[in-house]
Structure formats: C-alpha cells, structure tokens
Length: 134
Image (cartoon, rainbow, N blue to C red; front, side, top):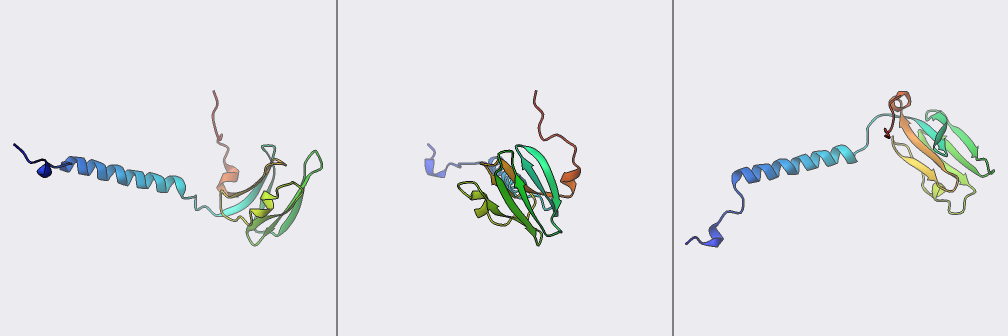
C-alpha cells in the first residue's frame, strides 16, 4: 500500500506547462494593460461621436466648444497637456478630471457628449476602421 503523503501532486511536465501558462498570462497582461509609448502629439475633440477638431499639443491654445443647444465647454492646451477649465454642465466631472498628457488619455463630458482624447502622430494618419460590423 502506498502512503498518500508521499504521492506527487504534479509531474515535471505538469510543472513546465503551468510555468509556461503563467508566463504567457503575465506577458499578455503586460501587452494589454500598458499604454502605447508613442509620443503624444495631438488632442482630438469629438462631439456626438464625430471628430470636430484636431489640435497640436505643442501650441498653447484655449478653445470653447458650443453644442447645438448653446451649452459650452472650455479647455486649454498648455505645456503638452490638456485640461478642461470650464463646463456649464451640472456635475463638472470633466473639469475635475485634471490634466491629461499621455496617448490614450481622455476627458469626457457626458451631458454635452464631448470627448477630448490625446492621440499620437501616427494615429492621425490611420485610415483603418476601428471595428467591422456585419
């Protein structure tokens, strides 16, 4: 009779497979969750899902966007970053977001359906679709 306390839980091939799966999971997580290190070059302004402006981050600009209902948002581009300085919406979440400066970061004003997103040089020239719908 064999003693159950001396039985092996895993064989060597099992341990190698587990190690490979753990390393693959770590690499996949790093690839998905770490942002693109491309140089932030522009801020893209979208309202109602459509791009209405693309402005460079290397110039100091203050811009006010007014929607069809007369509601306004004012943002500033200073020192390679963007900040929403005024919004006449109720919750002011977009104003409280603070500065954004890295590719992929965004400021969203849901009541006014306005999005400010930092994009890289190469994403402005990308003509590939974001999604395909069948």
